[in-house]
Length: 170
Image (cartoon, rainbow, N blue to C red; front, top):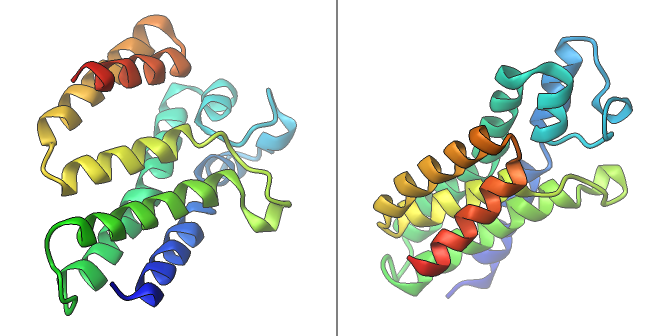
């Protein structure tokens, strides 16, 4: 395994992870999320401050900021030119990139290493890993369980915990 490729995969994930969707959506509407509600720049506070539709877009953006770099490094290193295109080496690139994306969300250097809680970006990590490793049935089931629980209870945390409990029994 070539370590510089793993390091670069982590950096790519981290840089993408630092992009904050909520504050961009709020700024377009003239609102400073850090001064609104809980002060957090994540999906939940975006939803509280700007409504459900904008909150869902914040979730989609924060999920994609992990999925996109995972696919980039997957095609750059894991599939093209790498001596081991299958097996644990591919999974290593996927996990390292996704982990970098979540850490970039939670600990962006430009904000004194203080960021979000990483729920949406962790969702992106789970979706990317499950999709690229071929476990698409759990991906679909997990999304259905997460969103139904979230809409019924109106708590993102309950949806996240239900998803984790489901994966344990899966």
